[in-house]
Length: 499
Image 1 (cartoon, rainbow, N blue to C red):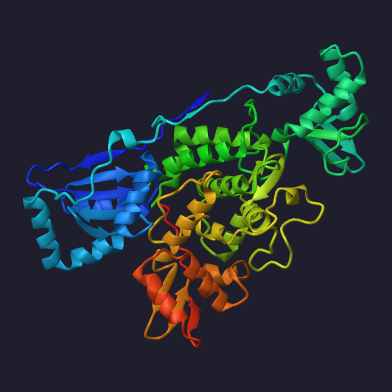
Image 2: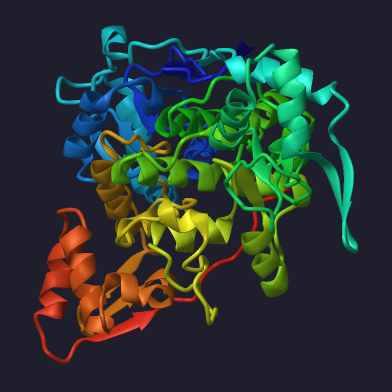
């Protein structure tokens, strides 16, 4: 069993001050940099506040926050009954000294009125342990692998001019297992060999009847012995294969908890070296071995979307920890094409996940070819149609983050719509300039235009359909109601937040 603590504190009172009769309340989530900045700003001003962590509550509380604020992002800050807004709104309020001082006096001298937000009741907390517990059931074939490693048949084999390290012949495997398990005939041994492949413990070496076990001199290799650059290569797991949706969600929760713990108090920098040295990161790394045998082929479309979004976002952080964040165009190319995991027996880079799986094998930005060829087994896992909403969930790039950081197969489409609303709510997602009849969009809409429509006008219509109800949406609809409106694209900020 793998145990690790996830510190999802539900409601925390910070800087208690008896001089204040009212309350300053901030809604936040784990791993949100701008939540951290808002809280640090209040601390620097020596203002007491209540921190309500939405990760600890169900959809009911989140819905209440959205209805009260009209927004889908966090942080959301209240001074008694007055809704201040997010981090940028707080900064703007502080700059207006007279108005800000009046608001502080209001909170200092008056109790929160009945129409102020109520602190969620403990009974509304999710019915789960705050310490996330990962249970590992032993796979029956894991015992067989232990014995196989000491059998002596795993060695280097030479075929022509090539040497294949840490491999074993199919025929020798059958010889060994028939004797070791006292099977009556070789046919049972052949079935066991095919099971090793089907269960994701081993694979045939390229060029030797890939995917089929035959009683001959074909070569096989345990996945943990594969020579590749995957961040989970060389690991072994004796855990029974878990459903893709469950494993992906647990991995993302753990890596996000780590990210949050090593986020600076001002929310501007992440101590990736600190993450690398932590025991929790070692637990996470061991867990990535469970990806070897996860079953993604039989997952539903929704389960695949949720699983691969969660794994993508976790892999980005894992890549930052292992090799450091990319700092220029060439490093970004290498990062997204080579940072990878072995998943279900196949190698997946960040590029493979985004463009091969989630975009239904569409060409990546600046590429002349698709990620997967027609004979690539990973094509069987890819979505049959691209899902454009994934662009708002793959690593939060907005100034505010959506209040959902882990995606679940059962409700992923609603969660993606919420992520889209949150992204478009921010100024780096979309800006509407009414007097110029102009819509300014993130570069994401330009890079992946074919996912959103045939032209710029289609992009603007897509945005209008996925933007939350707000004054900004009313302005957008007003602008695109003209035939001669303009769509432009903003410069993308590639700034890195490492320490």
